[in-house]
Length: 141
Image 1 (cartoon, one colour):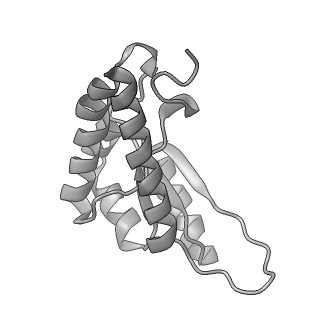
Image 2: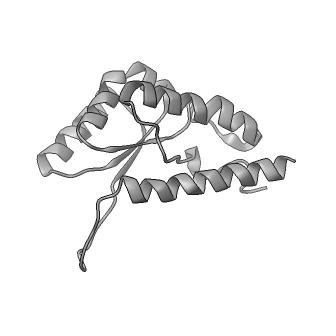
Image 3: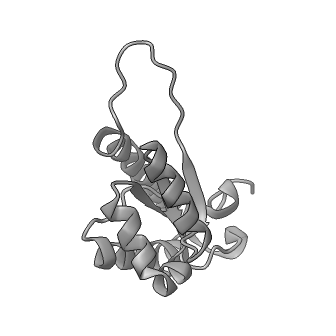
């Protein structure tokens, strides 16, 4: 049962990633060279503000993967990220090592509360999730 649940969650996360790139990404035409900028582990009241200032001055958009516990403390920064047209993704609530969490705990305690918080601050449900340390439950077992 746990394997089926884990596969189901991975499948839905995959669908979110596809939807994200269809709905949030800038369309690139021709043979332009492009790069995607992403920032993890925020928002931070100092450093994220500095990053936003540089991005705005260069007219560049990025994706910010936000940690729920930091998001609660820095709601105004989240609102600014959204207002300035950047994409926002979920980076879990506590930025934990998920080795010992089952997929239900991961969804209920880490992903869902962060998504709800981001949605409450921006009006947009995040459609992208980046796991802390780059892996999900069961990836390396």
